Image (cartoon, rainbow, N blue to C red; front, side, top):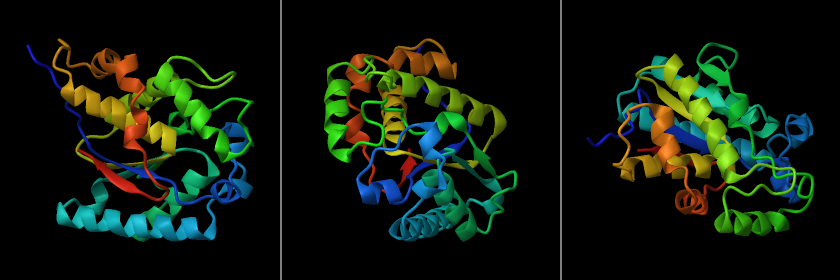
Length: 227
């Protein structure tokens, strides 16, 4: 019997606004560096986050979704928490309140010591490796599969805690494109005999799916509904 992933909430993803590391052309992917205030949003990024918040508010109104139903789940990195804070302000939601939730599993993909604090020019090396084998880790870093596994965990927590909510996930380029890749594949997959979230996602975490994550890339400050 055909089983499809039925989520209890509606989801939007938002890549953080342009950050100071983006401006400097630096890869900042470790938790230790990522939470430093010096790596939060650049001025341009604050403007992008503001615009994303306004767009999200417009979409909520168009869908008749009340603000009480909104939940903002965000990565602990400075650039993502800064973005989430700006969006919460646009929506007039208290950032320290119950509608905003920091989640460690939404953090940036760690690319490893060979890439940390090096130039953005090294990204193509990682993505070439991903395309060849999304289960291979950059030395000391996380593979696409590693990130997909922790995003699955984050999604399971959100689904268990909230129901009937409009959930905005504020995260980073690689995690968000990996999340979209997995969720898109679950819609195409009709082979799973289970309606368990973990089982359905596990069935699509295969090289042919995970290696395609760049197709779902987002620019900084881009808001996208996950249909």
